[in-house]
Image (cartoon, rainbow, N blue to C red):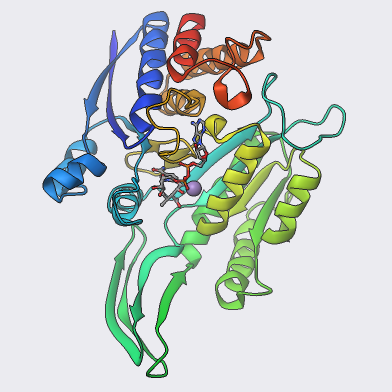
Length: 375
Ligand code: NAD
Ligand code: IPM
Ligand code: MN
């Protein structure tokens, strides 16, 4: 029997609740399709940080690299200053393993109604291809209580190393913050190629780029030019550049199939929550951080501290992440079994079977049990 080694980082809040259900479903799929999984579980998150002061040690990164793939629930907790766990764990993993694609499919399911009216027969079947290492996520910036700032910076990516000094003068009484984004030609090239290949696989001829060159011309003007240049590799396909504000407007007014939406990091974050909401809830949004080294699968949603411990979390996003992960490691049939089981569970009219997030009465565990049983 084939044995896959998977790193598991449940994290904070609802992270452990939803990943427990994903593990259950993967175990059921393994029994059906003839593979086993050795889970290597990591404790990183708010409690570990409070106990040890450590976010993510280098030794864990080296160990994780020896696994076939990774699953992450969510990190972040109200007891810890925003950014410490998110940047220290999640973004560190994405950057360290150079997971340059954040792939976030969004589709309509029977039993998960769109919260705004949709045209007769329309359904959402889109995928966000989010650049995952650049833009305003570089982590380069500083604050001043007035007078100015002058700090060295360094950022390391798979493609390049960026270093220098950030230096600025402000009026003496002007407290301020300065943070910069970076977009590079090689960064744009690889994500553009991935987006076009994704569209091809879907049998589509268009990629939409969510941009904002009208207001942020250096960063996103460059993005437009470089995406156009990279898109020349696909002469029989179309690149449609749209301002991200208008794109969001159209999505809400007319939720439909937008196909492949290529986004710089920050817009991709926002657009993927919007699309998850339009498909019925964040508890349906799965995603993968994909790169040429270790890839990491993680729901679009966060640790949801407002519902943690209540059983209200919808584990389907984590379960669908597990399916994406299995597909990635060559267990495509198991992935399709899980997707079909999740869809069929959602399609049941019995409110006792429907997740609480979607107006039903099924707790996190009940949903997980139901999908595992169907698998
Ligand atoms: P969130 O995604 O955690 O929650 C937003 C809203 O959606 C909340 O009302 C929540 O209850 C609801 N929700 C989310 N997932 C759900 C699910 N599976 N089932 C039912 N309802 C669900 O976003 P937030 O409130 O901005 O962030 C909370 C914490 O999570 C913060 O610390 C944030 O930094 C962190 N975060 C982590 C990740 C990650 O690790 N991948 C992603 C996003 C946010
Ligand atoms: C996500 C999250 C993260 C992001 C945060 C927690 C850093 O919102 O995965 O969507 O912005 O990428
Ligand atoms: Mn997000």
